Image (cartoon, protein in one colour):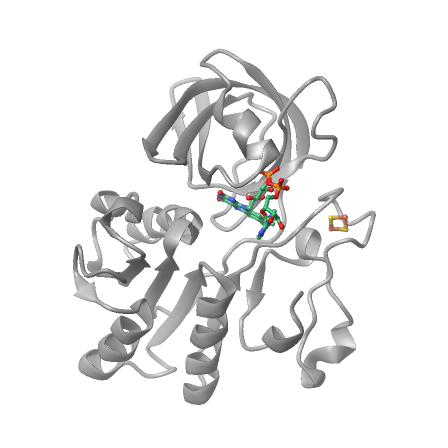
Amino acid sequence: MNQVDCTIIENRELTRGNFLLTLRVPRQFSKPQPGQFVHLRLSTDGEPLLRRPYSLEGFFERGRIRAIRIYYSVVGRGSRILSMHPKGRELDLIGPLGVGFQISRKKKTSLLVAGGRGVAPLLFLARRLRERKRPHVFLFGAKSKYELYGYRDVRGGRLHLATDDGSVGYHGSVLDLLQREWEEAGHTPDTAEIFTCGPHGLLHAVADFARDRGVRCEASLEGPMACGVGACRGCPIPLRPEHDGAGYPAMCVEGPVYDATAVDWERLP
Ligand SMILES: Cc1cc2nc3c(=O)[nH]c(=O)nc-3n(C[C@H](O)[C@H](O)[C@H](O)COP(=O)(O)OP(=O)(O)OC[C@H]3O[C@@H](n4cnc5c(N)ncnc54)[C@H](O)[C@@H]3O)c2cc1C
Ligand code: FES
């Protein structure tokens, strides 16, 4: 983890309120793992005071140039300020932070379950799986076709789309796609594992699905953060009673990726 200055290469609105940010990072920025995040200072005038955490959508190296990509939505003050920054602007960043996805050593089929803009870290993971020639299936659900970002980049694995309004792919929930994929492909806990990111309601449902079948499942969580480095204890994640010995692990240090079946989704703030 390092604090570095990075430069905006591109900050482009893809669909209304959803942006793709590409940042050139210096060599001191170490190679990140899918699921890790960066903590961005969004302005130099101290407003907003706190940094904002963003998952990495990708990490790219071409010659001497290193770049990271973030897919973000404008939801409040900080992200609105971020959306107005032009190409060439410098930003102060800490990262890569947190614990990313752990791919099993045993060759299993990875089922990637993405909801909305939770697709970002899973696109990064899919590229890593492709590099390692690991079988994977990408299941992506969003409200409508306008929120289906990045799926055209998914290569080397099977892809299934779902939208709430039926504008593209299956008309319904990505959870139905998971259920169907599980049954039709005859996956078992020995042959498959699940990685998921999206709204917490979806993650909770995927965690229940995984627990019922005894399948390994990792989820990348989001939530409010302050320091981002484990100092303020401001991002506790409640675990289920049988895992309570671990206390309330700080999302910024021990997450944002967790064993989804260990998280106490009912007590999540
Ligand atoms: C590990 C991690 C990875 C993340 N990755 C991404 C990403 O790839 N793309 C992306 O768009 N966002 C991501 N987020 C969420 C992002 O950090 C928030 O959207 C951002 O901090 C909002 O800042 P703001 O100043 O615009 O909004 P604020 O003015 O701070 O808040 C606006 C509204 O959004 C709510 N809100 C703020 N932060 C969060 C949050 N983390 N989760 C849920 N609701 C929140 C607030 O309660 C409020 O209602 C991630 C968060 C975490 C913790
Ligand atoms: S945000 Fe400070 S401990 Fe996690």
